[in-house]
Length: 454
Ligand SMILES: *Cc1c(COP(=O)(O)O)cnc(C)c1O
Image (cartoon, rainbow, N blue to C red; front, side, top):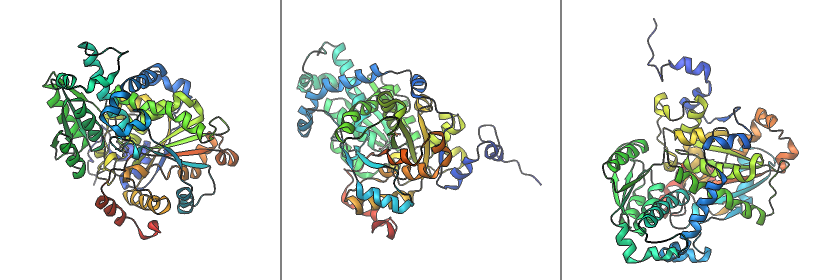
């Protein structure tokens, strides 16, 4: 007797498994990696986004215009003259610990990009989120004649400017970190600010936002539900700007500026990036804007010498699923019964951004998944080896080098012989965690297996 299985996007599950066998791993929660055979040379793939280097340079110039205002708002930023940027550092002990854990030989130099320690909001969201709020503020201020592009933007910190911005509002839906970045910046500017938080958002992030004068609305649903509700409420109010994490080009461009800034950082560390010295960048992926924007910026700067990989938790492999099936935002992990319940709250996204998936799918070499337990173990491993505490999302890229070594077909496609692998550099993009309260950190570390913390 046969039973009629419910169709998923018009097809029964076994038809999906026949054409897309990796979906079996995703449903089973097994760690997997997929190296996309459909990637294109940078010169071709970069055309998909509809954005160019001059857009990214424009975003960078805007951030420079706002730098004096940011110093006024956040005195700690005086050290970098108002530029919000993170360090790129060697992590030799962590590199050695990863080689032992996953059992591979060299594979090149390992660096950590500490967006976890970005000033103001302590996560990669300080790039895109803050940029979009500043973009909005500049558009309104220029339109009202409050300021001209040649002026010192520190003037926008005056009470009169804040009173002007008070007539406008900003709203966003978030699993936590985007809300923090938007909320802190938007409230400083003077906008009335509402953050719609998904059920998995951490209490301390809500507390911190409320302390900054932000209205926090708590939703019982996941990230997608919080965004949908936030968008609906914002649409009813013409003075409200909704930061749309699933579609925003401004967010994307804010992230992409990272690509421009990485170049001098790599040069300062003496890291060559060319055909003989490939640069692999391992980026944790939620809805896709952060890693997509960074990857886009890196491809503009380094072309085919940079290879980007996205990492997702096994319960939330939304970008892998979207690109692998070609359905992007038309499909969600929940459609396949995958839970989207993960300890990596920054990555707890069930449906990817359709804009980002389509913009960067030919620029991103591969996608890997990591179990929650592995994320906690990697957190403990980083803490034990480098005395550095992050949040679970931030270490998702760490298994990346081992997955490259393990995939003979991908290495053959890229001509990655032993010499070229040894000459490579890997950047683990550590996306958040410096603001995690100590008691939360202890909870994460208790969740790690014994072997990882030694
Ligand atoms: C948001 C976030 C990401 C991923 O960014 P997306 O734009 O959602 O893909 C990764 N790590 C942390 C810590 C984050 O907060």
